[in-house]
Amino acid sequence: MAKRVEFPQILRKIPATLSWRTVVALLIVSFALSQAILFAHYLYRDYTDSQLKQAQRKEIEAEIEKWRNVVRERPDYRDAYFELALLTYRLERFGEARFYLRKVFELDPNFEAGRELEKALNKRK
Image: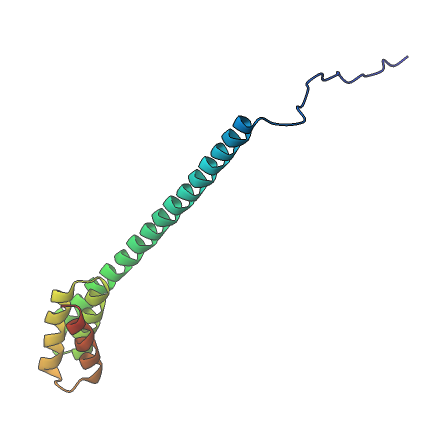
């Protein structure tokens, strides 16, 4: 004959009411936990943003090196200087961007896109 399985009796008592100290303590703990969760979320978001920006910077640096090679081979290529000006502007290297933009205007003083970048650079003094 199979033995019958019985579940244990749990004799804990759950209070019908909580004291005001217990309620306050629970509120403080829940507030602290919610703040810790928010802090962890913002910390993680900032970390992933910085990782993304770092990856983008590396891509831009690689593009800059590519265009510098083009300029070495063809020093009269206006668009290569303009690309360098744009890329260095994106990296917030404004002095370097101005240098490349001057090269653009030496090759083509009427280059309209260069004038737009010049306006943006003048705002960044």
